[in-house]
Length: 456
Image (cartoon, rainbow, N blue to C red; front, side):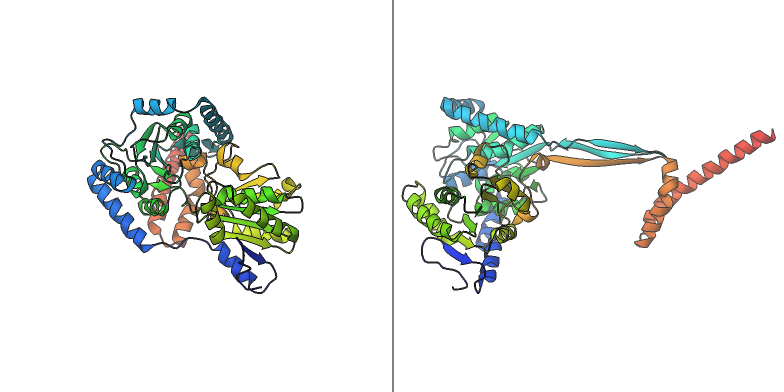
């Protein structure tokens, strides 16, 4: 077998143990996208002009890039209400149920403020409170994403961020899709702006005449959006950079080939750069999954996109055994990890790196995309090794506090001075020594006063 695997057919097949496998699999794992200098040049110019010209530049870019002629950027209340009214009752109910389930999931882990008092007069702790204003970016273009509204806004709403601002590109008629407006309503969004791309990130980061400056920007987007987020970091906080979506399925002999293929296609249909990977030690499964991929693609509405994604980043890995399957999956650190096995819950303990794990045969990734409860904003590109799903923590800040009374400073001050001298920072030690001198002086004065009373 060639080091790059068998590429005949729809997907590449790599077999563990073959010559060149390690190199090919490592290349698969190192999937961070190269940064395009042309994108950088365009984004920097957009950021600069929006910062200088504000609303006028955002409106001009919206006309140029999205084909929408706008008089104002913000969705007014009447327009918002009208959009919501267009959503079918059943769709409203589904969006409401999704928001409710995501809300209940995130409410289970809200960090609390805490404090502690120590003997000798030490008082310390942390105050946890929400950010004052956050911006969520919801992409448009190839599809409408009300689920992204819910996943980004609900955790911020749960911790009661005072102002949640949403940016999303308008359609050519200048309107925001009704389902997106409905999702914003049930998710707790306070204001909606019709703007997309790098210009939306600039407006949120710097503020304009109508768009308020936010403290943090979260949400997925194309290369221009992600690069803009990277460049404004420091002006505002951002979540982790979102790359193309990815799914990795670990399957054993109990897996159903048609279901495995459907899970791979459910992510491949997002975009041409999506990654869809199957790792299995069951050789018979490989051929049957490949057959199912071809069969299901024929009837898939977004089949052209999915087929291109599989051609670029579709891989089936034949592992030595089940243990090796999980070793390889942990190296890849996928955004979505599906365990297609009767023993999925037992096998969960073998997972070290993944955004979200989908257990068993009746838990397709799609339930997590929409309403299971866990967030679908997940680390991509292997960053699940050190990043976590979006959650309430992303919309909170912690402020520590500490107070020492004289007895506690007398107890620990000499150690502070020693550590300061160890680092060659005598000024740090001096700030303690001045106070210790006063404490010692006060102590001597009290002792002298007591001796005088005794003599009397």
